Amino acid sequence: TEFKAENWLWELVKVMENDGTVGLAQAKLVLSEDKSRLDYVCVAVDALGTWAANYGSKEEMLRETFEILAASSGCCIIRREVFNQVGGFDADYFIYDDDTDLSLRARLLGYRILFVPSASVIHRGGVLRGVSGMSLYHSSKNRMRTVLKNYELRNVWWRFSVLSFFTFMVSVGFFAVKKHDEAKATLRGLISPIKDLPEIWKKRLLFQSKRRVRDFELVNKGLIRNDFRSTLQDFKIKRKYMQ
Image (tube, rainbow, N blue to C red):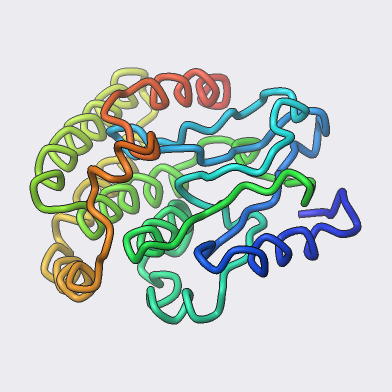
């Protein structure tokens, strides 16, 4: 990450100082190969946990500070007390979706998360790293962990079932086009959270007892969606990196 605006850190701190309900704030990330284009911004997540992200849009589209579901760890700031309250990053994630999990836990405690375009940085990496066995494994397992840990019980089962089916079909698709390493990595990502379910459930029970915000409140705000549009859009973006 490089800093496009010299005052990027102050811009993030300023929104925290002005509003005590803000737990996290994210800078505007632009693509290193085209600084006029946006990197991912997690405006919301769909039914499969995919970010509704505005990836590749003109950066000038987002000029105002507004509320988002999750802050990208590419460049964000979090209050120390919030970090401690939610228990920090989950070390079992390693990479991918760890920021979504952290943000959701802050959300469930009632904190808001803001996108701050005046704090602008250049992000290297992201989707440009391509699609690898490692990325498929960790993104698959972590997305399911996030669902199991953070959603209310009535929403866990249908979201987890749909996500498991989708992940399995992705693995089948890789096998069909003879990308066996990618298929196996995706399948391992599906099996891992099922195997680790007792440990994941302990974490779930510990945090769910503290939550102050219901799932439907985030749905009503448009931060959690029950469609699959973001997944379809994300697939189109990443498809060229699967060649």
